[in-house]
Image (cartoon, rainbow, N blue to C red; front, side, top):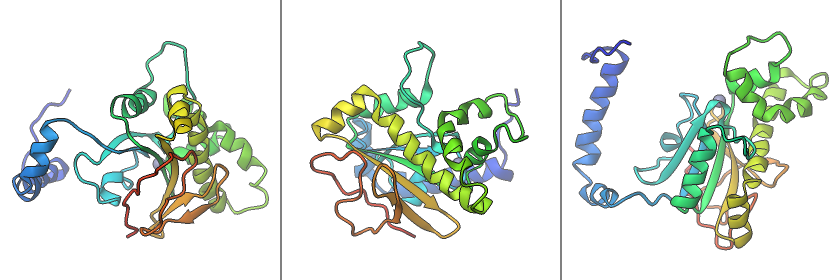
Length: 241
Ligand SMILES: [Zn+2]
């Protein structure tokens, strides 16, 4: 294992310099916030996002420390509930956010040009086989079946965008099947949202319902579209750049 300390140059050096800026501009400048966070976190929103380096939810939504409880994985997928006794990282993060932190909103944040969704679409079509990714993206295999009928009639690039949004809707269906999620949605204490960041266009969209369609989010929109809606949904501030 390479444990060299990062020097003053290169990618890791930029991160260390970035931390210096963070410490000066935020940590040392905003004592109230960081003192409060010492007492514990109370994020109101759980975001399930893709590991893709271009779609950091805190950066694209201008969130501050303490605002978002985030789980990121390949393609921003939520697997269906499982009782097989195996460790499940994404489900564990969702359970902790919902049960322990009591978040009010869960956002599944898909994005354009998602390599994970592409991998899922290409499965069995001669695509590169990954040891772990190929099995993981099968979480959303129903999307492939949904898109197969479209391939002949739509351009490949359009199918990819449709599939990315369909994967968000599939993850929301899986999410709603967790009993602790379903209970809270029924009780009106939790709302589920499907968002899609099209970074080619610089646009943030939200699913209008369980089957879509995705429409551009307006920062002044109140209430925001929810798939399962809490009784008194809170606004999630996310300015469209
Ligand atoms: Zn992705």
